[in-house]
Length: 244
Ligand code: UDP
Image (tube, rainbow, N blue to C red; front, side):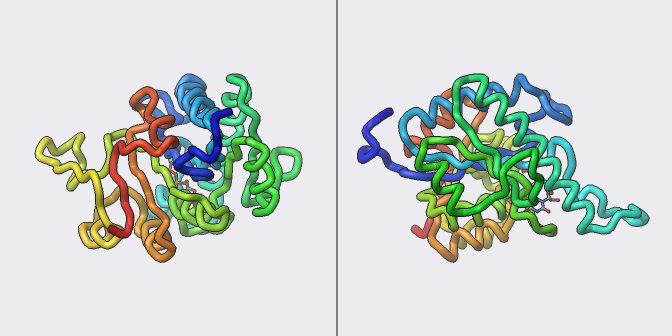
């Protein structure tokens, strides 16, 4: 393991959306996609930075998708279903990480003994200190928020130095660069700019939470090989969102 005093970040939270875990252009769980990410996370963890992984559930289900008239499901129920989707992703990621040699623990915000450990802050810290990658599943265990907010919440309570958000594009743009060739890339933004420009890179609650506690966010393209490692090592890739 590398010299820990030379690390830019001692501890961080890495948020990866559920979509990243699906087959290209599809839904559900692709072990091929998951193993590709797992290899990168393992390589990044080898340098000594403590990593907490927060996975979304959008590849399986998002609570908001049921919010149509006559859906016959309470909005809260739909969100709980979304949280359970993140647990499925976490279990798949755990096996993928362990298959490449990484020691992990899955911790869930909704108790499900027999499947994974409950999330207990001090226990999470202990796992991190022992060099285990922790996979934080079921968001924060409460409906009406997304895993972005969960990631911000966990980053704050675990004293992470930064929240990394892996996306499909190179960082934050003025509009969706996939649809708009004129989209402007921002290498750096303040939290206020993200909120004022209504940039849809993370939900606003998550950005506000990070702003309140000056927790920096780096948005980067996880699909480019080696980028997770670069982001974990503190290289200036993607977009940094901070106070100045
Ligand atoms: N969710 C929730 N509380 C949480 C985290 C997630 O209710 O603390 C639900 C919410 O419905 C969300 C779904 O779980 O849409 C899946 O998470 P998310 O949409 O953040 O996944 P991603 O878009 O990152 O794949």
